[in-house]
Length: 426
Image (cartoon, rainbow, N blue to C red):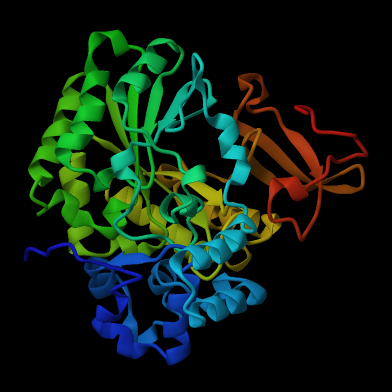
């Protein structure tokens, strides 16, 4: 059966037939919270993934539809009053953006990752780690549906000063030529797979030329398999997308999907399983990742099931992240020791082929920090940590220690253990 894409956003979400399953208060929450944190979903998610008989507790509903608790009480009441006053768009945006700026819209100092090309600041590129460049194609700065936990929510909120995006392929290519140690380029967003095949090809095909031999892996960060698998099945340019993948593989480069799956339900439909097979048949490697989220996947059994199912579909479990300290993190976040316990419990339930996954990790200002465990050394309870990636490559894989803090939910809440003045990399 061919299914055509239909998006539901702030202006038309009441078209969703299942809205009758929601109370007036739940419907109001979509209206109010969705004015601060962006809201968009589509008919595949609505009709095939959400259990509307249990919408209040359904994880996919929570992933897509704003809830009152996703804003602090004070913020919620401020937005509600402003909306009820029927302010002009300009007046309302002033109120909204004041609240947004209190939600840490630039987590982990992403602005520090933006490089220069001569005197030109490349706002659509981030280069934090020596080997990897992130590129934000302007046409891909949306998604098939918006995750309510998304750490890049400012990309979709009209906060142009905080948006990462650029169209200039030539600037990207010039930058890559000047940095021969870069081996990987990650197309990210938003979601690059919202772009047409022609637009995506215009960005990727130049990288297949001999002068970019140092680019060994092209990565695509995407939620499309979970939220719109018909991108690879029945969209008008689905075949053109697969031919592009074939072309990249034939060039001798590795093409890797960084596929976001937050819950086993997203792997359950015939459509997603067929889409995965079609992509895998081109030679593309699919690596899976997700943050650990309260109310969504905060049980070890869910992760064990999800990793096993991913391996069954010939995908590679890659990362368990800790939810970034932005947006609705007070709703989704978990203490660091709880994150480690869930990871360890899930890891112990699966076989070695699933244990390619790494985590739980935080992408913070200095780098990607993994929690290796909680232990006691000389009578002091500590977190054991290491860098999976660092701004300085020499920091990678050196164990270091932080005081145990059962309330900590992010790295900046930790202090060095054993009375030290700072961590080794500071």
